[in-house]
Image (cartoon, rainbow, N blue to C red):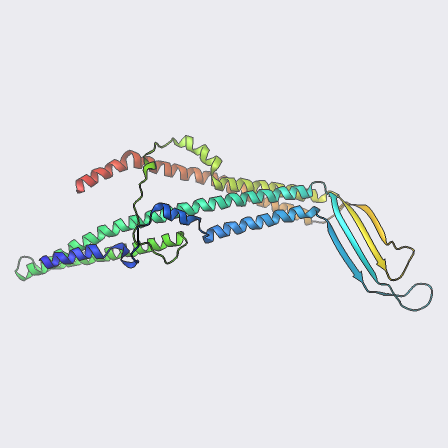
Length: 367
């Protein structure tokens, strides 16, 4: 009998959730896990890449009014319409510079659209960082919950093992029937399956936490249960929290910035039918002199697109469709976030008002 109890104690002590991980010098704290959320996780790198692309687009929009300088060299043979019937060299070398003076708002509107996109991507990067912290916290508490479930199932398994083993001796002396022994052994096997499943879930939870911390394969052995003193704060009313969420939620702010960028792009497309005013300077050298050629000339060029087919109208229609899609997504996001806030608010309110007190009474009863 003492030997069986010793086996049960060994099962409780050694078959713990951290049996698959190397012993750690100290327990992993929630603060240390959250600090790892700032590491260059793939999610963060994706958000940073989106921001870099938006910054590049902003530079491209601003460059529309930049000075452009071109060098053109030509090797040609020409036959004059009058004079000797022979081909002559008509080579040329030209240096031209062109600078936009005024394009009636096209460049400015494009820059504003690009700037709004950059703002959206920067807010998106902030949201990604916050989501990373929330994911790490969720994975951290998942491990704690999985460990508690494993400890409970492990204790049930140890008790069921001792009961089944004792039942075999009782069967030999005729104290129980073979049917009762089979029932106890079946119960032990069911609890063993449940215990092994709990162990697998605890390991999976540790792997998910390691991935969330950008440490794949580095499974934490033990976690320290954090002191969540902020959970005792008074919960504000839902009606007070809703406008705060709508004003500061990163996803809503990102959507608003994307909508503003789409508005500016539509205005820029409408301005494509406006004229543009450019300054142009050209210096040229010719191998064959002619009276109609200039070695140096400068001027101002007014370009007015009278007809461009359906190119601008098609681009404008596409941008309008994109704008309406963004607006619909924003409206749906407002409803989804309000519903999610209400769900979380109700859950926290229930926990503070009744679930905690009931849990304390259950603990007292179980003790």
